[in-house]
Image 1 (cartoon, rainbow, N blue to C red):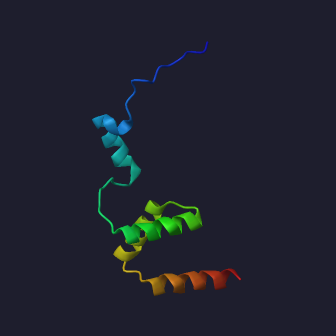
Image 2 (cartoon, rainbow, N blue to C red):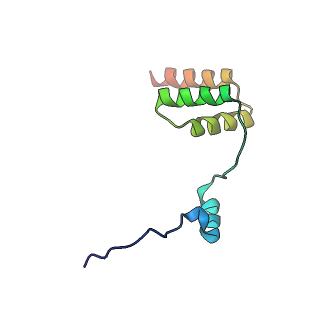
Image 3 (spheres, one colour):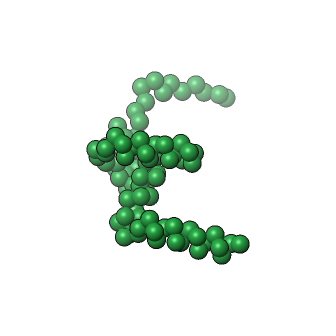
Length: 87
C-alpha cells in the first residue's frame, strides 16, 4: 500500500537542536562564518569552476595545507614526484 506523506511542515535537521548536534558531531566539519576578500573568493570560485569542484572544498584544502606548514613549492615538488613515480 502506497502512503502519501506530507512534508510541507517538515524541518531541516539544522533547525532541530538535537539533530543539529548529532549532525555536527558526526560530520567531521564545523559550520563557521568568516569574511574573505572578494578577490580571494573570486579566485577560488574560478579554480573550482575550472576543476569541476567546489570552492569551499578548495579553500578548506588550502587552509589545511597552510596549517600543516606546506608551501606551494612543497606541493609542486610532491606532485612532480608522484607523477614521475607513475611513469
